[in-house]
Image (cartoon, rainbow, N blue to C red; front, side):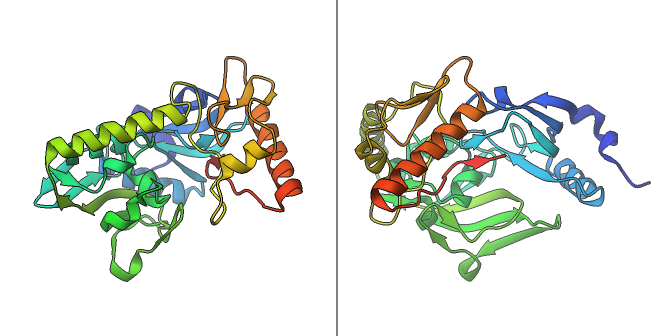
Length: 293
C-alpha cells in the first residue's frame, strides 16, 4: 500500500512553531515537521513527499535560517541526532554524518591529531550545511578538505559525489542535492596539542570580533569579491541601527541580533535597509548568506 504523510504519525508534528528550532528564534509554523530516526525512514519520508508533491525543506541546526511569520508550507524534515550523526577517523580521512555539528567534527579531528579544520572553529551549523555552503574564514574553506560527499538526490536516490562532480567557490558549492548524508574530509597529520592551541587562539579571536553570545544567524551577507560586507555596512554608519527588536550588531556589522519580541519582518526590513544603503553609497549589491523560508 502506498504511504501518505499521515502514515508517519510517530515522527510527524503538524503546524509546529519553527522559532524554537532556529538560532534567530523567529518564524511561523511548519505545516508538517518530520524528524526521521533512521536513514531508511528519511528515504521513505522524502519519497512520500515527492509522490504527494509536497515541498520539502531540510532543517539542520537552524543557524543560517530566517523563517518568515507566515511559516513554511509543505514538509520540514529535521535532521537531528541520532540521524546522520557520528564521526569516524581512518588514517587521515574523517567521515562525518551530514547532521553532525561542525564543532564536533573539528574537536574529533584535533583529538586524532589531524590538521586542516582548526581554523573553522566558531562557525555554527552541521557538516552538511558547511559543505554545501562551503563555510570558511580568512585562512580557507571546508571545500579544500572535501574528498567525497554521499548525498540524497532531488529524486530520492543515494549517490556519491567526488572528483569532477564537486566544485567549490566562495560560500558556494556544486552540490544541488536534497541532503548531504555524509562527507569524507582529507586532513593531514599534526600534533594534537599544537592543533588545540591553534584552535583556542582562533576561537578567542572570533569571540572578540563577533557577537557569539547574542541571538544571531551568523553572517547575514556574503562578502562581495575583494571586499568585506561588514566593513561596507559600518562605513554606511549602520552599526547599532534597529528595526523593532532586531538590530545590527555593534560588534560586527554583518550580524543582525534579535531580542525578545523581535519578528522576522523586523529582520527583513533591516536587511533591505542595509542593501539599499550599501547600493547607494558603494554601488555594491549585497547577497544574502542566510536562507529565507
